[in-house]
Image (tube, rainbow, N blue to C red; front, side, top):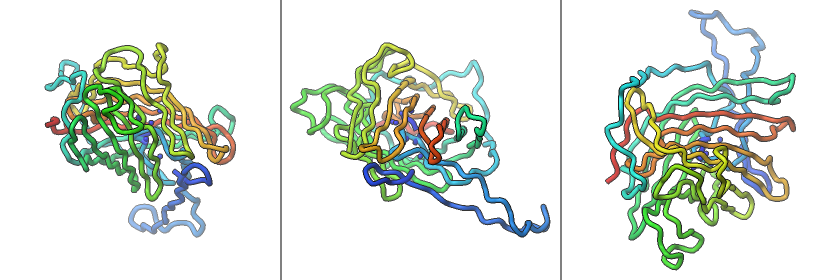
Length: 321
């Protein structure tokens, strides 16, 4: 949806005077370990620092610490080529998701001074969780939150789903008349982004092809915009049904490619461009089962920075009901 939804990086953060950003300066203290390595040197080198994208980050982009440990390889079997999903993903999410906590695995990289001689790449690998909570079923739609925890940080994204299109007069102020999945809010620590109008991420009924989305929202300081209408496959586009390998179990989803940008007013923070592919499981209440994020921005040193992060669920969620 953390959008390039996500994740739409999910997800990512510091606050400037006009647009919220979050600076994370967590450190890792050296510890003596005579058994394995002997005592540490008197002046150990500091851990590498990962610069974080501006807040708000594209959907589902997990916040990162300032230090990423060496690669962690989750014990996760791969699905077989002959495996197929037990449950089909319908074109519309008609029922809300079931509250629960689900494991996710992450793989990506953060490249500072992108394409320059001083380029430095930090690998990102690990596991985290996403909790579905605060599910509410209303007269013509439903809402829910996804609380994501990864590398010691927490991000909450709030969503709204309209299974069927309604007349504009029947919808709350600022909500478009189109059926679909919407982002209504994003919170990291004490910083929040609540776009008006909500940002549409996926149109219902889902069909392969370009999307026309109500996909620009602002809180008055920061604007997130997803290209609302383009036949270019590199822009907002439903690529069709796609399978997600949930640690050996095949889950069906709608592959939703979103391209866009985040702009802060008065140059208060670095502008970002992103591409975010969401794999939305409509049979599970419009949960994103996998996110593939690519984000470009200007780093704190004024040089280009390239951030890539994929997040994949490790288990099947409960079917919507």
